[in-house]
Length: 234
Ligand SMILES: C[S@@+](CC[C@H](N)C(=O)[O-])C[C@H]1O[C@@H](n2cnc3c(N)ncnc32)[C@H](O)[C@@H]1O
Image 1 (spheres, rainbow, N blue to C red):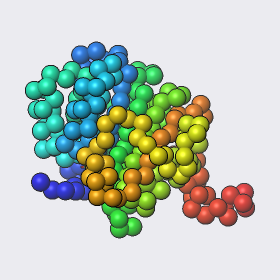
Image 2 (tube, helix red, strand yellow):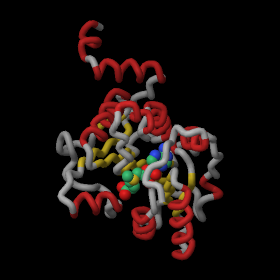
Image 3 (cartoon, rainbow, N blue to C red):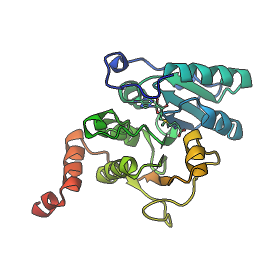
Image 4 (cartoon, helix red, strand yellow):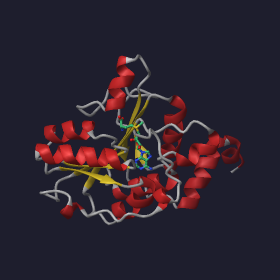
């Protein structure tokens, strides 16, 4: 199976309407955890069994992984879990905008594909528009949990969250990286990183009460982070 797919390809830019929670879960009113880039799904299969009081949705751009994860979910009879095939940057933003207020409680983006070359950074999953959609859908106190084993990948994600002004870190969290995982199950990549002595860089954000900036204001705040002299010049 291909390790990476290009999310900017014509095929993956096609919008795919995602079913609403009522069509995904036996009890659609339960709080919702969204895992973006759920891969083969082992993390959510284990977590959903441990947390029956929460609905879990995994979205993944590699369809064969989604099919395998869904088959296992059905075998296990987990009705608080669904895996959906989509490009998070194309299909998820509108879907989150339709969610009943307050339903989405946690979003995780764990070990996203790095796309190291500068010309490929646009393929990275946490783009400003997705971050805005997450911030709009999360109620105050809701979680955005990020992890990576590559500093050059997570640092821009952190810069984006900070530039938005929409998130705070829980009091007492170690800076710049949180020491432990607040979730009770490690992901596949996390297990690999830990056994191979790679760094595991984690940040837990909580949605604050600040209004979500416009796309233009967020871009301007990001540019100011790149070049602090802009802010100094006012
Ligand atoms: C490096 S893997 C990490 C998988 C898992 N989160 C873990 O920690 O083990 C990143 C996953 O994100 C998926 N992915 C990348 N871009 C995506 C996008 N735009 N929409 C949905 N999934 C995406 C990839 O196909 C891949 O399965």
